[in-house]
Length: 410
Image (cartoon, rainbow, N blue to C red; front, side, top):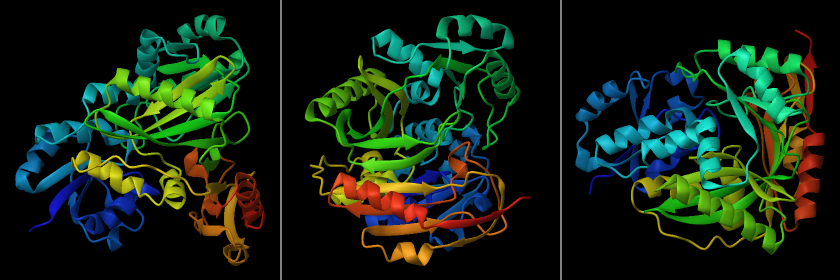
């Protein structure tokens, strides 16, 4: 029997994106990759897949292009890119395939729509104001106060998320965001900025999988970010170290939120903070977690959640018991100053550490680097797996400390 095709509309540029293409055949599918720029993806040229180059920002054009495929031979239309979730859903529905409602995805994709929906449904979340011009800022400041988080409503990877402590900082950052009309994928950005309360509490993400509207909690990830004023994730630990009561509260809150938003299929990555008032929802991302969290889950549970995510859209996912064995952590490698990366040492030493499962430098010698402002500024990572939370954290931090980056000024 001929393998059914999975059509991928673009991809994220690291982690699960190329991995999904590479592994699709082992899952029983034939990968088809549709992109407007194959040069964006490292390693794509070595992955056996059907490649189509077209304008992926033109939905009507994609619908016309899809006519070259036999609908009976397509299992699903998916994407691992935040920027193409709605496009992939629209194309899937056009072809009569399982997908989420584009309106539900729009609620998740636009952080202001998320805030409005959660407010309507009575969920605990940060106070917020949306601004569309500089004249709205003073009203927002009077309501939210300092410090406050200023962020675009429709970007990804903590890009341009800034903690502001003064009025001048807010005016400068809002002005910058409103002047930026096009995102990194050539799409028109929403002309709106969120100014919201800074919630000072431990941060977690809840990884879930949904099939036919029934959602399973895979687990909860503990998250750490770099120091102010930016929010770049630098360390993930799976599973988090929470009490049974705390886990139940977080899981209940997230499951209820996904039900209200009407998520029907696939992975969702929901970011929360656990406050004295309860579980506070920060963001709902209708996609698989980034930051190699799926790999941490695989190390601890033995389950390939990337495969499960794809199978959800193909209507083939079966609910599993995600039994956990030990802990896994990823510590990202960053540098405290800007400059040119001239070399890296210590990698071979780190590879020999007993708990280290992977160490990888994603930046190349000669590249300009900077103090991290978003996820793209991370230079590599170390992944470790341990029997206890304490030894896993300790090993991750020790391993990163052994990696020496040789950086010179530009």
